Image (tube, rainbow, N blue to C red; front, side, top):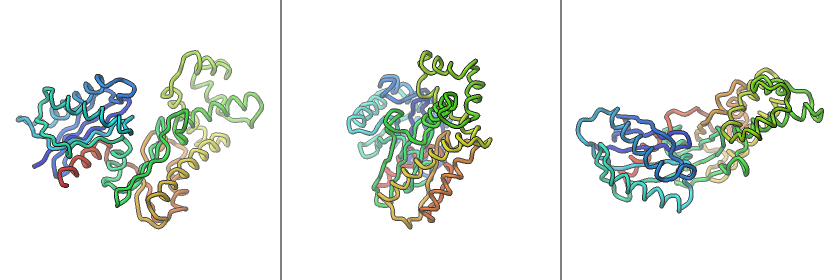
Length: 318
């Protein structure tokens, strides 16, 4: 029997699953962040080691298990230079004391970005599209020939259309325009005041600029816009509709690039934006299926780490 490790490394946590060749998850472990671009390679290595150790510990396997393959799907890994850095990290893993035996050949070490493992985990196979809309956004697809296409994922300054960050920014912008009298009245003005405990919407300047709020703190305000839209606010609904249009456009671009208009495929939606109360998931599904009737829009069947495990298993069967 073959045993593999699937690792999902992100900006907030690292998840590792220990899987056998029957696709059964024997153990699962979590640890700290592992986006080496932001925290450095040393901390990334520590997080991955801890996640592996915790996964093996939950599996309760008495003897050191031999690992035949590993897949690391890491945020911030997209360029050749990134992959070389992570390859060195895997070598360090093999030199460290872990409760496993890493018997890895180069062909059994797969390093990829987190969009691919989200696709494979979300759908349960290697073909389809993932539309990720959380703090940021990206659309990634893979067809039967192995051709891939990525749209977006350029970060909060250069892109991330349809993300929680962009929805939150649009909401605050609309509230301030309403306060100025430049745009129609919106409940967002009072909603932001109440949520942030502001005496005046003008105090938003202090919150956003002087407190040096980052992307995650601002993105966390997106549910305010979502709730306003669900409550019928016209301006909030325009913001949500614009987000849907951007995500539909990005998804359509992927379909046009590597699939055909009549392709039968699944689109998995991941990220916090899709869990809103304003039915953004239903709006997106209706819009994309109007253009491509043969597609099916789903929520994830499995987590990204499971997708990494499936990809690792695939390397043992080549």
